[in-house]
Length: 114
Image (cartoon, rainbow, N blue to C red; front, side, top):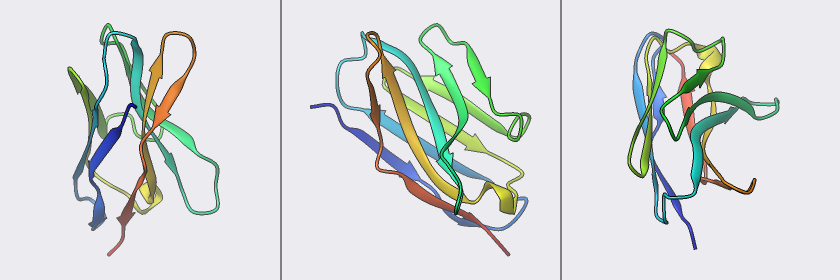
């Protein structure tokens, strides 16, 4: 059974940085895309950033030029700089496979507050 193990996250002051990582335990041959979503308090889950199997990246407008997604084999990372209070959310790792299925990480709280 595939597992997504997330690390990173926590509490940071506005303007600070955090790095999140997610390691996929199963085969990577059928992965289409890896990425990060977030769910702010009282809101729906939203896309943050994705990286496709051939390296193409996409970002939400709200995080462009501040966040950087990268992938190294079975690990996807999200470097978050210039964090704002609006970035406070539970962040989830996501992996999409050929055939349309997906896996989710357990989610980790990121809080941006002074």
